[in-house]
Image (tube, rainbow, N blue to C red; front, side, top):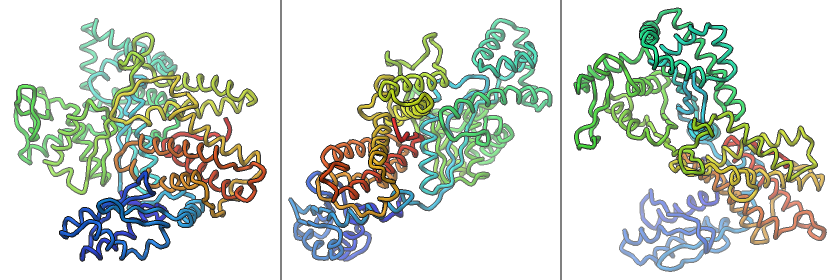
Length: 582
């Protein structure tokens, strides 16, 4: 992804240097390698590679590049050749101040837009007649943050909640519904005890052969389109989606009923998947099943590993459904990019599905499918997190406990808040804590769910960042100054801490670009935490409202306001709210 903003100092510097490198090389397309440096604001080491190509001394090449760099005069206050041929460059304070002023006048605080792609994101995916549990946390939270970021930079994002609403279990669930009676079953399910309903049906199925026969017959009716069976199935789906929506609303994610795209939606496509693969000559027989052998996959014995498309008895499976998804998303939705926010254990399955889709010509460049994999949420025993009863911890219980714990923490920190204010802030902090603890962890890793750490006001946590934002808002309340009034002020950078904060603020766009490129929200979290700690150092060393510092007050207030806006926008891209007081 390439940003179109012009307020990133490293991008501006790279553009200025590129012309000089091309002039020295005698050709176009030479890209200087620019990186941040501890010794200076930036360092270019492309001269080393260019010198090797030209067979010349690296320092002489670096000096020749500098001679061509007339455009650096308005960007850098210091440029020197160092070591074997590095260019050390220090941004001028005036240049940084001008960029800060441009960002402050931008409602998007420097975040650029990109050429739009149509992106389908598959995430959350709970099962009908089962309550959402902690296993749905990561897919839902990571997926929601990617939706927000991709939409913000200009992509057309289609949310697809691939719920489990089809298959053999629905035979026993519908028969159990009939045994209870529709009214009693609806009352039972509407009270939120989806798991209890499912367990009762499963217990009856395991113990009663007559019930098993009824359930299997009901599956046949369901799959053949029997009107009454479909009506009862719809009843189960609708009652379940009420539960899903309650969780989504409480958590503050963007999914709605319009985003539901369950397994049932692809039912009519399943035979087409088999027929199309057969016509392409890709189907083979293996142990009585129709399969495809994508190259490069083997089992433990080293034998070719098949992707089963149709079972020997004629039934379909997850692979068939997932291939149907690819067809639907590429051919009907005309998607350019398919993102699957699905747990790491499904890596091989999805890789095989994507490879078969490529073999069939359904997934052809520039169309792309990406598995956004993630690890597990672990309890303190470093095992999959469960409730005290040993069952998976219910999602809604997790959220409610987070808000309750945050309420107690806010009450201790600020006892002067009214009860209404405290409850609203606790909602933001509690939910933000759960989301941030997840998002700030590299998604491919497991992480240990730790209440004390995630609700702490110290360290890389949501409360720390939310408090940093609230503290800046309090500065303006104490001064009785409108934040909007300082947004046309061009900051004056004198102290090192002011300069460090300026550089951190101007790196926001690059952090968002990097996060989206790698589909890794923890990168944006790291940036926001570094920004907050940089602001703390600035605030401690650079008095803002203190008497005797009136000459720097407006400039420093402008830096404060821009920091709050970047924190607010950055957390919003993660799906986290920022209170103005805590």
